Image 1 (tube, protein in one colour):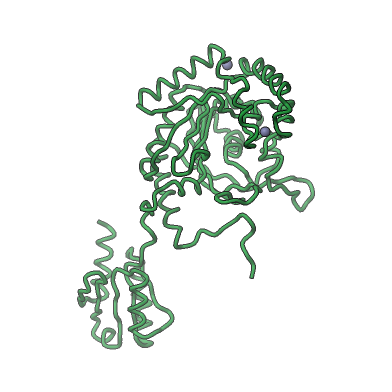
Image 2 (cartoon, protein in one colour):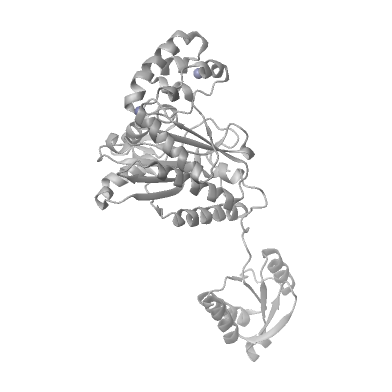
Length: 421
Ligand SMILES: [Zn+2]
Ligand SMILES: [Zn+2]
């Protein structure tokens, strides 16, 4: 037997109702905030992620599915995240020429070769939204967070907390990074090998270390927060003011960082109590240098990404999202002529707007009724030789057990008027 590849899984028909529910809610909420969907390819040139995510990151250095295309000339990568592809498309398609704010969202599978563990997959699903414009107005940031709070409320996700920080700009980060580098060097013996390496090459990434033994030392390293320049401090103050206006509660997490140079100023994470303290359900920030790093025009960017697996885990069981429903009509037939008749009726009912299950196994009426029950069909239409001759069909309502006789034309008309109302 061939098994699914390690770290991948099937979303089965019995679970897909929850996914469809979440996707519907996401789209509905995003559209209320005037975001439009963008669909980018699953494969991109490797260079996009090396430049757009950063060669020093775990994602790029350890986790990407990268291969040389068969012609031997191009290195391609299965996308490990969604922001760089969206910004690539923005640049390539000259969307900046529209000279207005662009609000884009995406939903789709991402690929990272992580060590398999509970809740972590090598093909996982992310949803994200990006605001690309000429302004770094912090009201945009507050509005995006407000949108997430509405989304969580609609999905029944409870106990969500918001952590915010400012990661500064090149002006205030440069001197800070030097101080941090010295502090890490001074305490190198207390830190893991990854931390020591990062301390030399990209000190801000030390704050991403997950090694338990490092955490005590990391907590005592200097925080950028205290060294923000006036412009960054003012931006952060206005952002917090806009959150306060909306009565959105938050805590300032001074050590939250985004390790890449083009991330600046506002960073945020939202955590769900249902996932335990460690797990962010959504994370985002401002990335005003990304478009230029990818060779595009100067563009301010702000966005977030959210793992759908985690989002669904943090939803209460009861929010099962209208589990897959049964067909409107199950056509039960006895004999060849009734079966041919039923097949034509099924087509007319479907064209009129009904979902119809036609049993091709030609089993006994009794087992067809059992199957209709199991499928959750709302009505069963029984068709035998007599019904074909008289033109009158017996329709049984499966919840009330009431039976009525109608012609095929009437039944189709009923469906059509229902579908139009
Ligand atoms: Zn600054
Ligand atoms: Zn470490």
